[in-house]
Image (cartoon, rainbow over all chains, first blue to last red; front, side):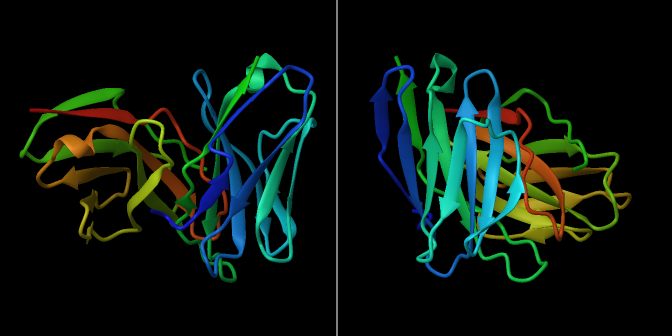
Length: 115
Length: 110
C-alpha cells in the first residue's frame, strides 16, 4: 500500500459525459501527479500540482483539467468524453522539498470506460 | 529527459537472479537512474535509484557502469511475484516528471 488513495476504482460512462477522479496523496506529500495509461500509449504524464499550484504540464488534452485543494487532495476532471479516453488514470504523490527530486508513490488507479 | 532503451521482454527462472539491462547513453551528469515496476494493472512501484555508485536496498541492486551510459537492475532471487513490467527512467535531480518508456516485461517462470 503506497498511501495514495484514488476514487472511484472503476467508472463507466458514455461519450460526451463529464467525470471527476479524486486523489488523496500520502500524508505530508505536497506534490500530486496525474498519469494516463491506455493500451496503445503506455504511461503518459498529464499534469503536476505542488502545494495547490500547477507545476508542470504534459500531454493533457484541453478537455481535461485538474486542481489541487488546500487539503492537498486533487481532482482530475475529464469532459466531453470520447471512446479513446478509456484508460487507467493514476495519481502519484511525492514530497518534492525545494528543488530536490523525490520518488513518486502511485495510487491504485481509476479504470475509466467510455461506452 | 535522456532516452532509455530496454529489452522488450525477458524470462527468468524462479529463484535465480534477474538482470535487467538499460541503456542511457545520452545521460547527463546531473541525471539519476530510477527503476519502477508495474505488476499487472497496479500503480507503478518504486524500486531503486542511483547517480554514480552502485546501490542496494531490500528489493534490488542497481549497478551503474563507470561511464554511466548503462545500468543493470538485479533482483537477486526472483519469485513469481516479481513478474511485472520494469521501467528504467533517467531524470535530473531537480526534474519533476517521469517519462515512461515501454519497459521490459519480465516473466518469472516456475
